[in-house]
Image (cartoon, rainbow, N blue to C red; front, side):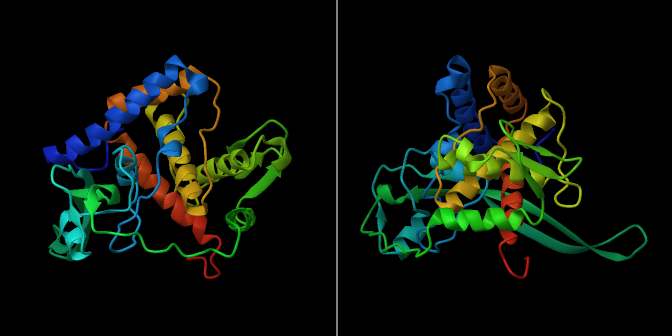
Length: 294
């Protein structure tokens, strides 16, 4: 499946290639020692916000920043200057893709005017807080509610949308019955394992035809690999939202990693597309906790 991001611009393609190369290297190491492997999107993401606006980065950009080796928050050269900071001489920026919505009117073959909308991208470079001088992080707000309580409230809300049943030794999402199956909380070795597993399966549940209508595919094909990446990234994004350190769901087979590896090598835009789908899924999942449902 080809990427939905148009890559006529070689600079954009280079950014996608760079991220894919980093993840491919990690997966190849995982195939050599699958028991010691942790998916990079669960272990290195964090601090992916803009230092001047406070807005979070999304999708593939989060992973680009995570693999940079620097600690956020982030901003462009000019944004740091506006904040009274200066990027140190010799520091190199990390490339990200900035979406630019395009909307215009166009006449069709019948002479009728219709709206055309799409998104194009440009490459921008951002620098991390540990690459600048003259900036101090503001005091972080204190959340009076335990983060796990917030996550439990979300799980309870999503359980009103999708049927959730407790089943020993089995975690899955059944699209035919629209049901999440998951072991009891006490059956997991730790809290993070329970939350991550539920977040993974809940992300799968957003693929239902009445929701975001993603395809599941069959094990071994690119569609299946993409959907599993969406679920993994969705769990990682939700974990960041609730301050929970997530981990890769144990699929227990190097074949699983090999499936991801082959799909990524065939399409370097796959990660960006999967990350975009994961972001949409997370927005839908979090909407369940809002009174207006939006």
